[in-house]
Length: 544
Ligand code: GLN
Image (cartoon, rainbow, N blue to C red; front, side):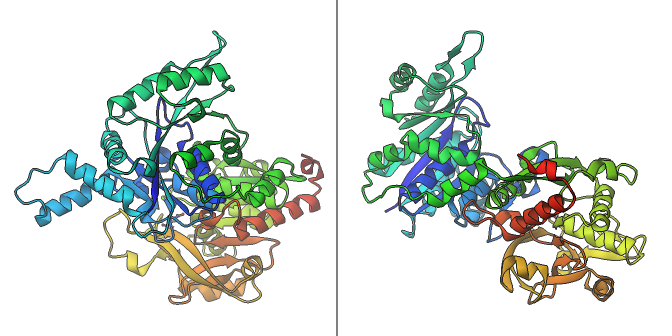
């Protein structure tokens, strides 16, 4: 029988609920328990797939092709597990399901209401991952902040479950803010008291209060929070700002958050946490021996969450290379032939990011040209790979107007074209080529060397592809397809063997990088950047 931990948030958003939830899950997993984690989002979109990254940050794609919240990326990176469509539920998905049932006649004669019909469906989904006995513990993060109108049905569902499930099978961890008032030189507990009061008004009593704060909490203050929030003092957990999110599991372990939860849930079959690999990673992260500067060329660079998985993959790949990776964001809209040298000459490697639409495209193409001609390590992901194909077509094959039909539907040379199966699709939600697909690597290629295998699987999210009618011309001129889908022949990887490191991938390798298993393309890209820095006399940048 699985046990359930719900993680709610109070006072304000952006407190790092996803990181606290993932850290607790990590500790329980490290103690030998089988754990998974899911996110319930209160917005009406069925999934975040159609949301602009400015609105919602990156859209994280799972193995089974679900477009999900970026917190699922944290869960996978922390736990090295695969999540799925079932791990991310939105209000939109709940209502869609209930309304479809109503149309089928499942509620004939009845008025369909938030309570019980919507809350029943929320509860069904909350318990779903625990149904087959695979997991000891299911953590559920409730998106939003307590008090939001949108999250009320979710909080109500938690209330019902707290009442329905045996006491030791269900608990609530509430994350709040203890602000520090500089003028008063004091930490303030009032917002936390209010937030817990609001929870109580909704009938939910938190078992643990995790307090985000810029300053450590004194014992006195913990006592005060315990008293006002009606919990024991060891249920008040301090969570000060961490130098890196990967430090948080250890901070939570020092605060004994995991032990408190285990005790509350009456779990006894656990051992000391096995965190050897995690600590090794943290040591390498903290004490790098060299440094590289990587240019991230994208159009959403104002919002770091838009490239979350890429940035985290750099953290993982940097640590294993014992190298600090400094990422410089370069806005693709402002790169031109005239300023490209000035903008990119200090870099040790260039990553051209995924994306959609025509804004900033020419700047990306100019950046690829620079990397190709100067022998600068280049890594293109999805749209970034497509841009490297267009650049090669225009400047090496002399197809001056070559383009992707995404940006120019009437280009005479559609070197990137819409996939055949996409041509009939008009609906936008969940209709791209999504999720994991196999890829076969050419023997002797850079890709094969990097992966150390010939058959791999990576996740996708796109509608356009390399146009195979041009493949022969590309290969003759020096850009080869080193990875292809074994069934369809679709080009998944291009590389330029003459170049020190030039690789473009149609898939999203950043979605599979974890602390304990850094993604090999990122690892080798950083290695190549290090070599480039050493060779090009950027020795000064090597000192950390
Ligand atoms: N817009 C491109 C396509 O749909 C690339 C998508 C991406 O970068 N994820 O094919």
